[in-house]
Length: 453
Image 1 (spheres, one colour):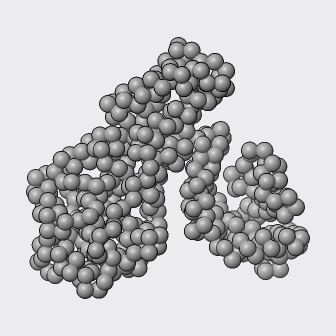
Image 2 (spheres, rainbow, N blue to C red):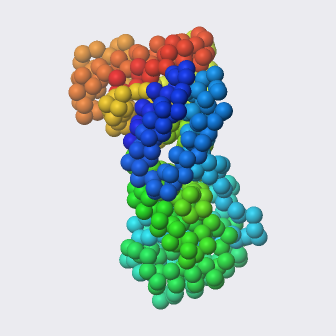
Image 3 (cartoon, rainbow, N blue to C red):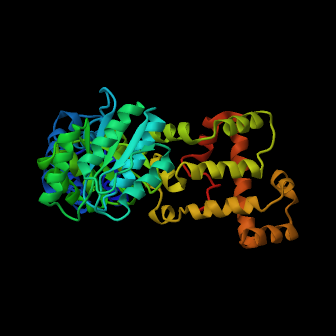
């Protein structure tokens, strides 16, 4: 996420970190590079100007110039101003109203409204403990209503069908009545999009807003459109009282122009980020955490929260107890670790949140490939239980059979066994001296058991 921006800013700020003394000249040169990095990231020009002015004002003042570590102080200023630009803190949904609370989803066609509606319903059900009902008011796009109905089943929430020939306002008000009768907490209304902003579209969504009086009106926008996303959000806000923004496809956006521009241009907070195609790929937007990720400082808090939700606690507890008893870390344990890694979004997602990943050469990061993890799991699955528990018995004929069964080559089987051995050594350190000793042994390097070594 935002790799290009992160790389450019990382290079500039890395040079500053070690500086024992800063002058107005090298601050000016550094800020020029920061300005270029932001413009290349498609951040809107007024946003760039305001950001650079705020950083310059603080950098040339007492805060940085008189600091004992001025380079680090300037990096901290850049971080703080990025957070300020994106909105200081996470701005959650306001659902403290008598149920059902209505959430209206608005946006252009193709922005990801329908998928985001389902993702939000799943997030509210799983993370906020709210019952949800989904309804589609898109009577124009072929199969739009059926698409949302399918997604509602997938995320296990209620769905309100549309009567044949019904108009959007009728469909939505009937859905709210249904939710009220059934005691459902939240109604999420997916509206029709257009390829561009037009008066007919705005009139329809204004009528929906007037009839429903939603507590949240969220603008769904594709982050890949850069500063255009912010300008479109502003046009919508002028016609409709938006309460926040859902920024989709953020996982594929190397630039970050939309995330850095929207709050400044619209005055409205980004409330959620769409970070993948699956229905669980929705994250609350935390400006401080994203600023840390952009500057290569990682996002350990999000990583811990994700681990709490997605890791199989029983398996983790069993493995910890097994290692404490001095038992061997075997290939079944290795497979569990690989599967849990895939469940947390794969290596790319983990690397995005780990501190210091910006220090790893770009060509190494590009080798990170979750297909390799899947292949490794397939190879281990092709082994017998005895082979998984006693890897030392895997010799020539067994390797050939495992390769044939998994559709791979003997060299691939050898590689998995080598990576397992390296991970086993790491686990021994873990069992003898805990996580602290293991991390000291790594000395900031990536574990050798990861599949791109």
